[in-house]
Amino acid sequence: MLTFARNKLVSVAALDPETLSIHAVLDDDAYGLEIDLRVSIEERKILDIFGKWNRWTTPECYRAIPFLQEIKGELIDETMGERVAKNLARKGCRHFANLFLECCDAATQALRVIRWENEKVARPALSFEQFLKEEGGREKTVKTTNTSPKITVPLSSCQPQIESHGAEDNRKDGVARASQDRGQGFIIDLHTHTFPASSCSSVCADELIEQARLIGLNGICLTDHNHVWSLAQVEALSQKHGFPVFRGNEITTTQGDMLVFGLEKDIRAIISIEDLRGEVDAAGGFMIAAHPFRGFLAFNTVQLGLTARKAAQRPLFQLVDALEVLNGKVTDKENGFSSSVADALRLPATGGSDAHQACEVGIYATRFFAEIGCEEQLIRALKSRDYVPVAFRSQIRQTA
Amino acid sequence: MPANILKFSLNRCTCVERLEDNTLRSVCTLRDTFTSASVEIVSRLPDLEIVSAQGQFHHEWLKLPDIDGIFLKLKGIRIGAGMLKIISGLIGQREELRQLTYMVEECCQAVIISLTRDILVQAPESEEAKLEFFSNMVRENIRLYNRCAAFAPGSRLVEHSQPPK
Ligand SMILES: [Zn+2]
Image (tube, rainbow over all chains, first blue to last red; front, side, top):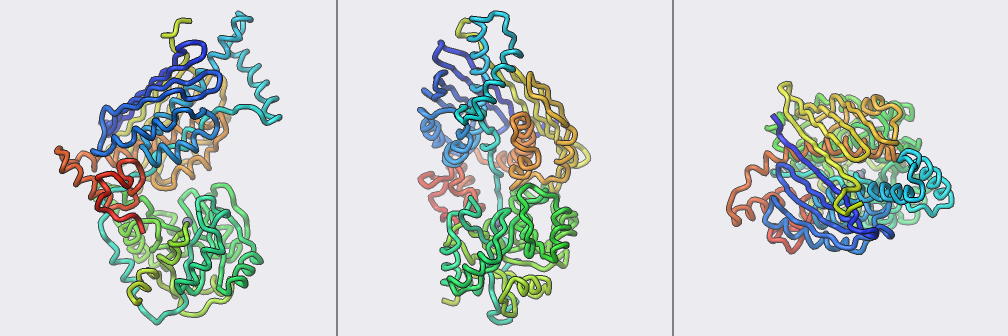
């Protein structure tokens, strides 16, 4: 039996030689919506757009409609996907965004048909295939001069993000780990992001480091996405701020994000976790599974049958040196679950804020029990397994 | 040509069914003026790991080099947060692959929404109770805060929620 079905239909007609008319429907188990829009053929400009809910979930879903109206006047071009992801999907409704991008793609395809039909007026025997060949050739020549209006819309840039519901407070596990107090120790935020090295971050390294110092951390580790900081760069930052700055790298693998330390190699593409393990071993480095259950507990775990013991059997955990069990970007429940899994695996546990803004640094961090002065010492300390994750910011709030 | 005759039309259907061996089969089929394609992803509960992927892709002018090789790359990926980056990173965004990447993503999203459906069916009938139900949902999972118009400041659903720390 089907547990879910989503049907989408998009039709494009030419109202007149200047205007496309597009009608689109999305209908699934939870949502029913429609979009009607008109697009100018010459400029690919959205002349008007109307959205309609047939079925929805929350009593406030209607608030998304005005964000659809904001698209009026915009051009369907190669940046449309990104713009929709930032605005309509994020501020309005991602289901409308999803259907709207199907409309943009369909408009692009319809324009191709119209160009062929126009060519055929002068050359009635022109086949569609021949037309494409000629157009493809033209596009290539134009592309090299960089003026080609590339109008394919990246559909996926507007895929809805994961829905996450039903979290319950499970902070206890994390705090239990954090409370094994052996004095202040040496506290480092092991997971942070800076701009421009991580395009998703909105804080520069200088500001992040200053903030880390201000709140009383003992050190900070820059772990930008698939980015290698040079030793000279972090040493210069350290000197400049009179504050210990270390470097790591958050690398996306087929099994999720890994925080690696001591790896100089610049890895840009998605890599298999096995290959990354090989690289880290060869470099004598250390690898932590970052936010290993982010979004994992979005659903009822009982319904999925997910227990910590079962989760611990995932092959990826045989390939990592530690688990990040306090991460600032996931729910308490997900952190708690990671902690139980780390316990089941008898793997060491770390904490890091995953800060993308200055105010987030130090939400979580890792407490070591000896001072750490350089990268080599950091890696040795990580391998010693002698550290605990800490909810640093809430601790300083309590002591203040 | 008269204005009522279509220049382009598209039909996309994505379905999820739960199989007896604790797996979910998600199938996306696409038929449009130029394309006839389908993608099938089987994922295993409880961790939603992709155990197999297959499909076919026919297009008027785009040709895919090695479709089976592409599907092979998807084995072992987990459906969940961060998957879009992994899928598009593995398959790529070249023009001929863009549609296939999208269909894989639609399959995976459908799995997620099908699981969300189980929560949505618990929503009560009356407006007042609905407001309470969805307000609780945001309070319990603050990541939903400001994620769409319904959960943005100004909405009745976040009146009593604190913005994320
Ligand atoms: Zn991160």
